[in-house]
Image (cartoon, rainbow, N blue to C red; front, side):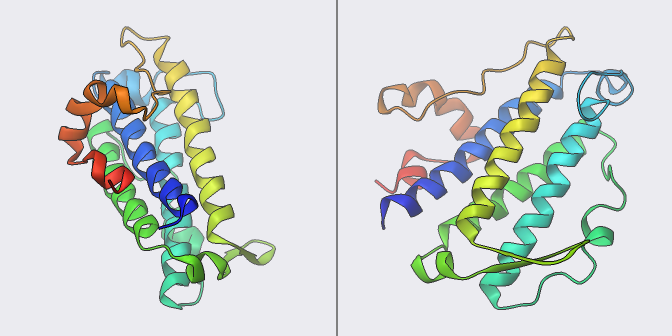
Length: 195
């Protein structure tokens, strides 16, 4: 497998790992802190921000999966992915749904090959059909996740829950530092790196 494909797989695993660490911390919040406490960010709550990250995941993952199958773009993406805007009320429910979404993203990245990377993905938007490559959409999706995880991380700093470190690296020498998280997630170093 070429290094770029391996990198995309590693990014999908890293995305899941960071979501796991962040949501584990958020699960320590009371429901009021999670849902109702007003925060300063794009979205006024931790609940709103985490739901947004998840629904955007659904939107892009669905588009990439459809393209990989040769299907047309979703005809009613707003109703399918963004109505309601915040589909989950509790952190536990967001966490379960995010974990499922992360597994879909990993599975998608693991099946990528050169022809799939070269094939356009169609996404219907308000202004019409948008075409882009899987590599560009994945770069956008990973960055979107990082952006909003950072916002939640900052929001957590205003609570009694210590924000988790999310800028970990996959250095060989730090395997022991991630072993417990990987065990919780069912990941292995071989899954991530193929070695």
